[in-house]
Image (cartoon, rainbow, N blue to C red; front, side):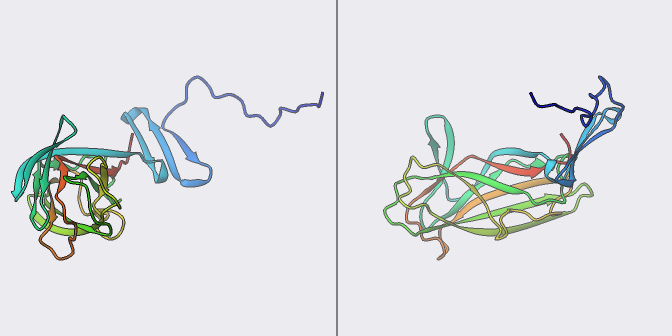
Length: 216
């Protein structure tokens, strides 16, 4: 039997460690988790930060939309080809744990009302937001996203779509601040020449905001 040396093995951790206690990724010193019992906090940085999802639901119709459903129990709206329409979402509060110095993304769930009969088409989505800050100032903006319809898209194909501002996310870093109240409106711009999909599109009556958190 070969001889085994164990003098390079560190002693076992004690049953209790005084905090705060920080664990660093050995391959990336900028990524760490810090346990801070005194402040009841588990902070994180770099790639160790968790990704969280904030959801909000239908609030009010925008322009031309029709009520429908997905499956047998999920409420939805649909917008016909050549129409502009969608819906407003109930306002959300930007949570305190959100790292507002990082981008965030908005996702929606869509499916066609009828099976596609042509490939190579595009749906133009528009995402509008209104932001009210803790100081009481208001600002609003809209951007559009031309989404390539999947080939042979059928009514049983459900797609979670990231509304892309052209940089792979919906909102850039520092668009929002912790505590902001934000309203969202999602729509199809079917009357735009860029929207070439010749069938109605269904939207589940919700959106999700995916963000990077500063703490666990």
